[in-house]
Picture (cartoon, rainbow, N blue to C red):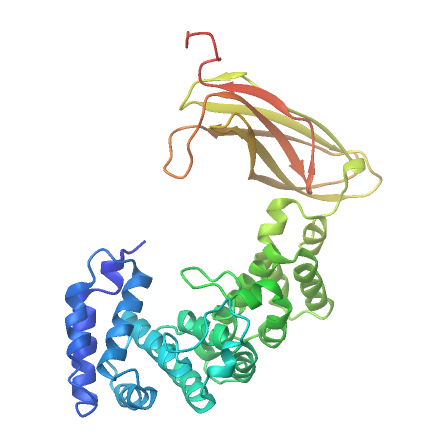
Length: 391
C-alpha cells in the first residue's frame, strides 16, 4: 500500500499552490498552502489532508465565498487532480459547514444544523460533486453529514441521478457507515436505514464502481443491523438485474463468513445441521511446534433426501495472552452434494509468525463450520506443553 508521502507528498502540495496561484491569483498569495508542504512530517495521509486543508482555509480567512471562488477557478485547470484534491475537499467542507467555528461539537444537545449557513452549505455540496471526479470527495462529505444529516442526504439522493458515475458513487461511498480512513457519522451508525434509499437507487447502476460501492455499503450495514442488510438484499433479489446476484454475494461476505443463515441462503447455500453427517476434523498431530503447521481431514455426507449446497469453513480457536481462546473463521471450500454423496476434505493451517497475529503457546482447538453450523471441536497444543520444560 502506498505511504502517506507517496500520496499527499510535499511536491503534490507545491503543485496545488501553483495551480491556485495560476488560476486564482487575486484571492490569496497561497503562502500558507505552499508552506504546509514543508510541515507534513510524519502525519498520516488523512492528517496531511486536514493539515493542508487548514492551510487553504487560512489563506482565505476561513471565508467560504473566497474559497469557493478560488476552487471553481482552479477546476478549469486539468492539473487540479489526484491526491492534491483531498485537502481541497476538506477545506471546502470546513468552510461550508463552519467546522471549527463557534458551533457545538457532535455530542451537544443543540443540533449542529442550527448553526449552518444553508446557502454556503448547499454551495459546498455542489463543489464536492464537482471535485469528486478529480479524485474523491467521500471523506469530506462526512463533515456535511455530521453538520446536517437530512440536508446532506437530500443532496446525495439527487446525486444518484447524476450522469457522472463518480458523483453517483459519492452518494453511496461517502455515506457508508464504516468508510475506511473517514470520520464516523454517529447518526448513521445509530440508524443505518437512512442511507438505504440511496442504495435502492444505485444497486442496478450501469457502473461497476458504483455497484461495488453499494455492495461495500451494504456490507457495512450488515455489521450494524443483520436483519436490515439481509432484508434489503432479499428485496433486491426478488426482481434482480443480471448484476444483482454478484452484488449481493459481495455485500453478504461478512455475514457469510460469520455463518449467518439468512445471508447464506441469499447467496445460494442451503442445507441444515440435520441434513449432514460430519466426521472430523481429524488432526494428524496433536502437538504443533510454534511456527509449524496443523494438518487435518474431515468427511461430510449429505444424509437428506435432497441436494445441498455447502459453504464449508473451519474455525481455529487461538489461545490468547489472558489464557482464554478466541475463534477465527477461515474459508475452506464450497461443495454441492447429491443425496447420499460425501466429500473428503483436507487442509493445512500454518502457524508461522505474521505481523497481524501473535501466537501464544497452549491448548488450541479446530472445528468445521458448515452453512453457519459449527460441529465438534478437536483440541491440539501449540508450542511446548505447559510444565514440560519445552522438551
